[in-house]
Image 1 (cartoon, rainbow, N blue to C red):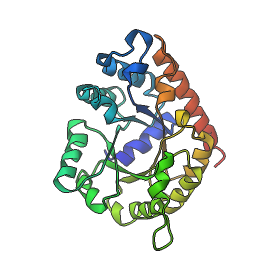
Image 2 (image 1 turned 90 degrees about the vertical axis):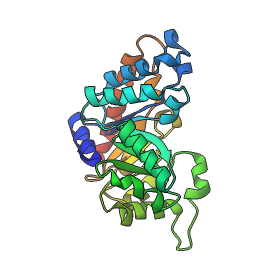
Image 3 (image 1 turned 45 degrees about the vertical axis):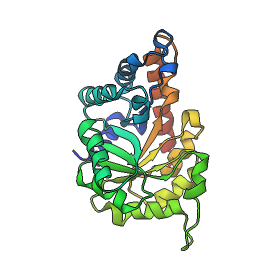
Image 4 (image 1 turned 90 degrees about the horizontal axis):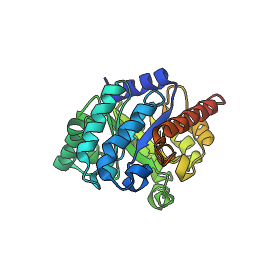
Length: 273
């Protein structure tokens, strides 16, 4: 099944725009497991089991696993998500950006080794850095466009010779000539709702992956009003606020409560659009 179809069905089945980011930090694990990287799979699996009926996607960030030499835990985790939440897509957050044979290897890593349904990519080396991934025709490719960090303005908000900003140009390419197979989405940060609205204007039907609510301070209501449209899905990602809702043995139950509240808030905001 194509990523776009999986996403649509998961959003409908779970009435959800929420994506849970899986960024395991052993130093923040529950007290009994604090600092124990060997618990990475167990921790993430508990979060998945507690929230699998509340989300439209899961988004493991590869660096949090690789830094702990826990790539095997990531493989097991993706397999578990596919098994216990078979309709929920997995977005591997890796932000790869290279060309040619190297890009082909990154694609094999994401789609064959980890069996992800979508991958985040940096488009700033041009179409050459996107094309190798398009060969996996059922997979989603989510391009950095207007990111949530303040420093993103250093490049993404620079005006090009034609007058538009760089992030606008990326959105136009992603919605147009780069997207012949309908595989592309865009990353836009919740900390910039005005830019979310502009990207949605330029790319009315593309999935938008929106990080930055919760710990980064993005406003959930403004995010939904700016980005959600019928036929234009948004994937609103929250990581730390859900993962570390409790430092005690009830961490999974606490994560579920926060996920439920976040999903409800996002859905309420959708009602005014």
